[in-house]
Image (cartoon, rainbow, N blue to C red):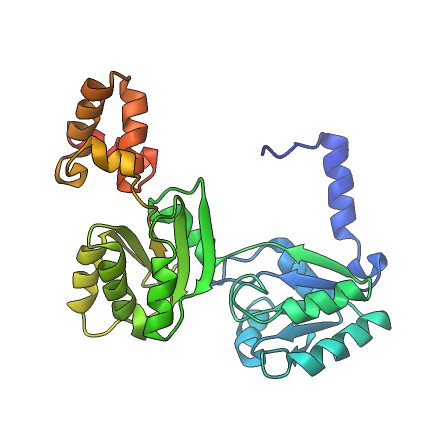
Length: 307
């Protein structure tokens, strides 16, 4: 969807509205996205809101204080995490009912995404308090758009189960999925998860390991499941925050059209499809990309490199 562009008068009005003290809009719960690694990945709006609210509810006050100190923010903080959210949510709602504005942050990323926040949001809505999202960095979205896997249809499912049986069941459930699957994974379970993917989905399933996204040691491991698994096994342990992406299933029709499409180059496969199905190169490239679980642009780049 294209964003509408305000004219000069509209832009002035927007700027004027943004500069007003947020308290003028009454008490509210602000869901503020914070950097997932690089401290520069925060919006001007987020910094302003964190400065102007009455209190910041933090998953870990010590972690958030590093960010606040970096930007000279002195707002009062309180803890809000999975062990105290039942009582703290009620306390924060009471403060808002009395006129306070509250910002909710987690250690990194958008509050409520695999982090505490749902209980407070639900309670605020039930009490007819405004809930205002302040968008920003999100680990799974950053990993998805840089993965090279199709982004037209995807599903984010949080962390894979820690127990092997439950994890394999979750992987089995996406075996024939027509969309890219996105999970978070603990680094010490990354090899186990890739092993299960190989055994359940097959060695040739396209996967991506996005590690330490936006941080100093950011890394993307892209390829077939077996290749990525062997890369991880060759290391002395896996460290850092992990986002695991699994490419969508190849369709039965695609498999039938070629005995082993992955054994030939993208260019060769496109030529095969053009000849066998009598379609143009553009349509053939789209089909070849779908077979391999990669985006059309990635397939195009690979085809250009093979010329």
